[in-house]
Image 1 (tube, helix red, strand yellow):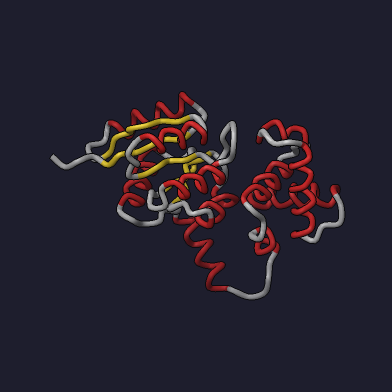
Image 2 (cartoon, one colour):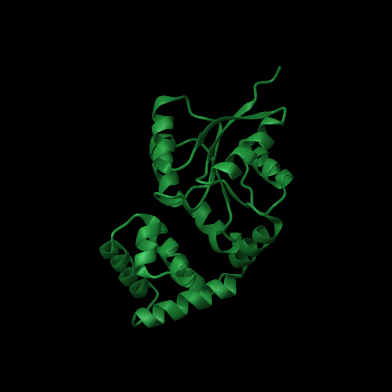
Amino acid sequence: MKTKSKIMLIDDHAMLRHGMAMLINMEPDMEVVAEAGDGNEAIAYLKKNPPPDLISLDVTLKTVSGFEVIKNIHALIPTVPVLFISMHDESVYAERALRAGARGYVMKQEEGDVMLSALRDVLKGNVYLSKQMNEKMLQRFVSGGSATPEDLINTLTPSEFEILHLIGQGRSSQEISDLLCRSIKTIETHRFNIRTKLNLKDGADLIRYATRWISEKH
């Protein structure tokens, strides 16, 4: 009998994570061997156990973001492929996920069969994106041209990118601090760096920019 591919799930929504595990475990070629609710729990497991064949990772976790987690995973196990499975719109996060080292991106709103197909694609060594996202990225590559607002956003670090997204959702610095478990001073430093990179003059300009950017993405 062929050995099943071993999958690890990292998601802070326990019910959803268990549902994904049940779906995967029903397949003849894959099985979930580990689950974690946050990045710290995941890294602790990976330090003590053989690496899985693939890790499924959410973008937003209760401690650090998925972008920080994938960096820590690849520092520990450079070769393990990571697939982001998230509620966040792929038009906002998919390209950033690939830049962070992921092998694909799937939205949680998709049917279970889509998730299973994505897992299998990544296990084969391929990169998985939806058809729409593939076409969008190909069009950007072909068109080339001068710098666009999106090019400026791509200069942001993963932490700055996540904070810009949260600002666009109407979150205050205190709310972002609480959500990401970081100090107000750190959040304000990130906000200043974002303004500098995006050529924005003040906080009000940043809020307007972030709000407009989010609305255009959706």
